[in-house]
Amino acid sequence: MSHVILTLLTRPETAPATLAGAERLAALLGEARIEALVMRMPPMATILATEEVLTKDQEKRIRDQETERAAALRGVFESWAAKRGGAKQPRWIDEEGVTETLVKSWGQRADYIVVGRPNAHAHPTEYDALHAAVFVTERPVLIMPPSPAVEFGKTVAIAWRHDKFSLHALLAALRCLSQAKQVHVLMGYRPGDAPPKIPDVLTEHDIDATGHELLIGKEIFGAQLLATAHDLHADLLVMGAFVHSAWHHLLFGGVTKYVLEHADIPVLMRH
Image (cartoon, rainbow, N blue to C red; front, side, top):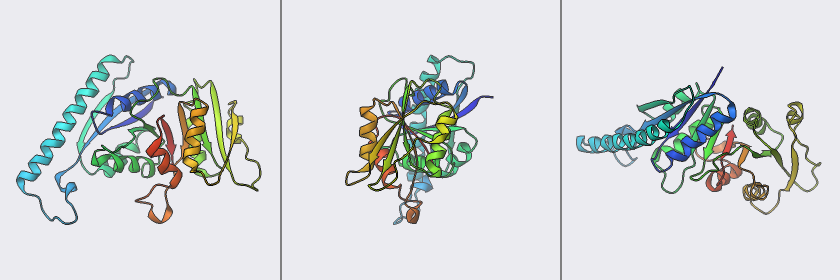
């Protein structure tokens, strides 16, 4: 049985890194089919709260822009697909629709989802796609920076705390550790807490891991995680994904938000 990796393509500038991430993930999993999804925004989805209708010219302009974006992304996809081998040919999917609906529909049928990390130049669909991938599909999501390591997954850092979200992320990562030479567990603790322990699930799966205790204090913990991962030369960070419960549909949790905004290595997240 092979895995299915859904790759969300949003901008031609970030698509090569996203596709490279999907290809590397497929190699770590052993066998997988890559599906590339482009979501074209329907004109009505662009209406602001202060607007009521679009003119026909406005609708046409928006559709033309989205069609042009999809065509550019297809060019990147076809160039990438022509260079890769393997028996399973990648699949191209181009649909117009609401981002969350499309990500949910396609994402819940996949084993993993790969998406580029949004930045200041993000397309309007990118943040919605990332949020839907992590919190609506409940699938593991690989978030790719613009310039990732070519062969990530050799030195893996796992952000760990004893909760179901960290466990979900770790279980999803177990299938990706076949080529890992070093596995590090980054364990936060507060003064007075009992010393943190490496999760039993790693021992039960015969994975040799080194633990690192990170004191939770005045420093931004997301910054501590990334700095420690860099010090360890990690090429992949695994972590649970959190949101502020009162604003579930709007705000990522503090550590999650910081890592999403600053990570320059691939991050495997799961809610």
